Image 1 (cartoon, rainbow, N blue to C red):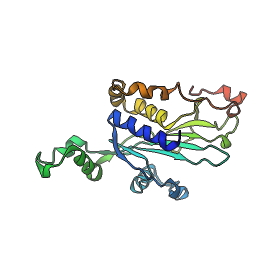
Image 2: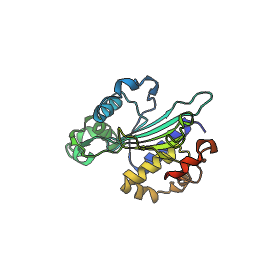
Image 3: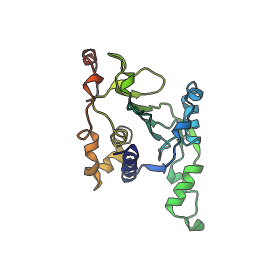
Image 4: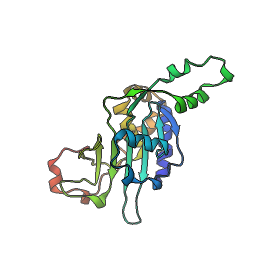
Length: 223
């Protein structure tokens, strides 16, 4: 199953959960100048990524999801990111209240499109927690840099090792459960949930034995 097929499945998960705002079919990740944004603040990095549409999905609260494949012919290399939105927007209900009910016969889908483009920033969030999952076996360092790991937060050295190899669906389900408990609660009751639940854990392959050594047993890792 190709990465694109996994991403298409992820879109269905986001739609079923009710949290999807925008799908971007052409993120053009190849054009990102990493060196140019590396030293920017998180707010400026986020704005640069959003304005240039370097994301696969935008969520209702403004957060972004990226699924990047940098694999070569000899080495698999994947990176899945949740970019927590650093600003607070007016809610869709607040935005919709500004429109008369009969304005141009506009429907909810079109109104949500206007909301995505025109919503107002109400302020900065006091805390953000972006998440990134990396699988890069060629960068593995015994006891220091796990082949598969998750970064929590921004501009720190946190790398929590993963025993299972995530897919876009499993990463998205992890984000839904940890960041959006109300959406997750509703998703648990959705008729399609059973179709996706295996991606949480059961269908995921384990890291290869050479991705770990004895020294790695001395740290807590996600199983």
